[in-house]
Image (cartoon, rainbow over all chains, first blue to last red; front, side):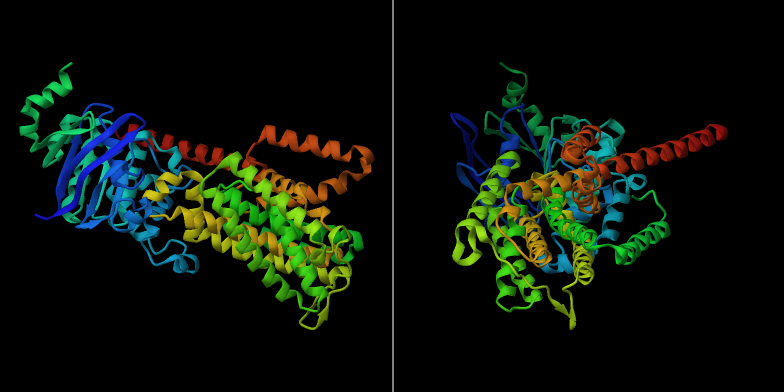
Length: 247
Length: 332
């Protein structure tokens, strides 16, 4: 399988702190890669470096073999890389449907056609399908700010898929989501992964969620890659057990 | 406003438009001047509402753009150019200057941005006052002609009021289209969550600059109408206090609400007139009224209406839920 994303020796320092200290890995087409590690080990910083929200101090990011280091987040998104956030990031005053249309509109036409063309950029049907897929039907016209935490998490995830991305980086999708909704979310993610052939990288603390969802898991500690492999292998790795339970 | 039935809304809108056309026919010179001023200030406030209310970019320079438009129109029409050409130049000029003024917004936000735009406002005022070769300096420009529209002279107050009202109608439609378009949605995304917007492919740089440029261009349109309205301009009306007045109109009416600027401009232009009978006290009363309003509703007059509608919707929704629940219990 070919690599969708190749990350080579990414570094990011804040003052004297090496948040990410030479991380290399690749993500294969169609896989779901888990990314775990203790708090503060550099997972989110790594995401932000890959996605252009932070400029890495060193290293290279390749998407389909093309160097994309230093591109702006909006440019990367246009190339088919999407994300969700650790903390809630929806547009609270817009309705659920408007949030989804907004999430897809920049992938339709160009600046001029978005000004003179249809108000919904032709996305109402797609948005409604996504609303149905994530079981948010009864909330479609509610302002997103009025939804429960778990529902906003679902909306946040749904928004990441509106542009038809090839690669999605999910930052703690399960955080604060109740168990029944979590099962739903997992089912949705697996379905999109299979049907749309979208590749995922998932940061998560919920081990059960990661181990059952992901084909490979990468473990980070203190800004470095500690282990990488199938879930069962990683679980038994002494270095991983040490990082989680040691000190 | 979604609580009103659609036909009722349309009827109300038509009634207001009809009243704006018919009622002023009996107004005297002064009444028509005030109403024309309301139309012009509504246009400028709509521009600021776009930049500030929808896109969330604070600007204390809208008055300067009104000035730029006014001087462009004054200079061109006193040199024999027709007003529509002058309006076009005012739009292009203030769009371009607004675009450039947008660049600081890519680096600084909120009150820092307010200070940058405030500095620009002062700069523009100094240009109006000191570059006498172009602007006439403190003596200003007088004898600004009013246009002939389709061969009809608009020298008299009533025809020129219709010029202002017609321009307001065109601008209103354009702004309505803009905020309903994906651009409008992207502007709101800038206001609510620029970080998330970027990750959804929204080019926040380009949209920020556009929000500034379009908002400023509407300031220019207002200025290009203000010059023939007063037929005399000097630098004083375009100093910082006009920018502050426009900011107040947007906030009092309700920033980020479509009808906010119309209401805000009405209060800022008409209320002082209505309070004139109180003689020396009218400014004080006006100030107190604005303060009380903002304490009661920081989101402006339309914010009050919005809260009332939201409360009614919630009530209706919980009533529906209660009915559904009682049905479920009956089934069980």
